[in-house]
Image 1 (cartoon, helix red, strand yellow):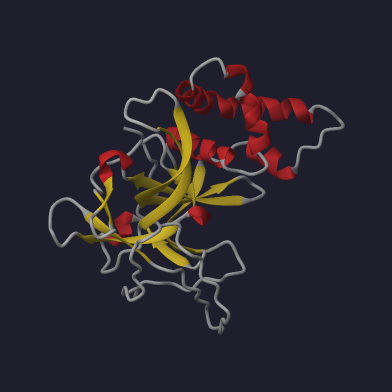
Image 2 (tube, helix red, strand yellow):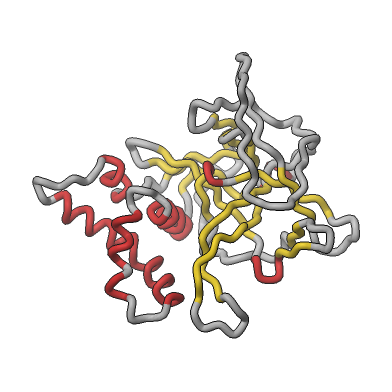
Length: 276
C-alpha cells in the first residue's frame, strides 16, 4: 500500500472517468457550452474542469428522489482513496506485466506496452483544424496501481509513453521502431490494465537510439488446471513482427474468468510519493 502523489492520482481519476462507458454520456454535456473555442482549447479546458464538474453534477442528481444514478457512478464520483495497492507484477488478459524497475533487475522484459487510443492531432503540418484519429502509442510501465473505490477496485498502469512526434517510425522493411528516450506528454500517463497489449523492445541491430517493436500473442495460464480452447486476441498493430519464442521465465499463471491475479506486491516503495 502506498500513498500516491495527488497530481498523479488526479490524472488517473480523470482517465478513468473519461474512459468509463457509463460516464461518457455525462461528460459530453460539458462540451456544448464551450464550442465557441477551438478544439485544442476545448480539450485542455475539459481535462482541467471535468472532474470537479462531474462530482457536483452527481451530487445534484442524487438529491432528486427519482434519480437513476447507478451504484458505479455514485462511487466513481467519490474519487478513489489516496492509498493504493502497488504491484511490481500483474497478470491480466493473457499477459503478464512487470514494472520497468522490476525489469531492470530481471533477465526478462515484461514492461513494454502498446495501446490504441483516439487522439487529437493536426492532419497537416500547417493545419489549423485538429481531427480525432485512432493512433498507436508505445511505452513502458512505471507503476501498477489498483485504485480503491470502496465498492470496487480498478487496475491501471502508469506509463512512460514514447512521443509519436519524432519518437516512432517505420523502417523500409515495415518494422516499427521507437526511441524510448523520447518521452511524450507527462500529464497523460495512465491506461486501464485491461486496455494494454504487451510488446517487447529489441535494440536495433543497426545501432543508434532506436528499438524494434515486437508483438506477442496473449497466452492463457492457470494454476494447476488444464485450460483448452484458448482464444488469442489479435494485435492492434499491422505489420509488426510477433515474438512467440521470447523467453518468459518470469511468467505467472493467470485465469481467463477473472479481472486479474495480483502478485509481487511492491514493498520497496511504501514511503509516500512526493511530486518533484
